[in-house]
Length: 155
Image: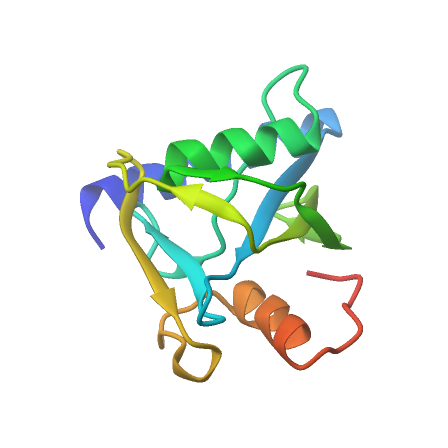
């Protein structure tokens, strides 16, 4: 584990502990982004070993949709050309904090690759060839989407 990853994990744990003590919740919009070949776009952060759906957290005063669109532009240079479609809302407890991941489907967009300081890799994957190091939650969401399963309530 490198120093950046260790520092990020420590900082994240401290922030989560404070959020838990204050009774705060987090909301995290993410997107299943599909290309014309039905491949899904995944990102690998500089501070995490796994692949994830692109997205992130809300800033003060932001709506879920505005946060999603901002995160997609910042992380992968993507701008939607139609409204994102709501897929599911989940509940997750992480280090004592209630987190609500909200997943959208995006099929129509323009994309201009950019360099984000927090994103190490951006790559398209076929559902049957997902990376070995995909996060378990991301894998479950993609299973739900591609197998047309009813989304679970728990992340």
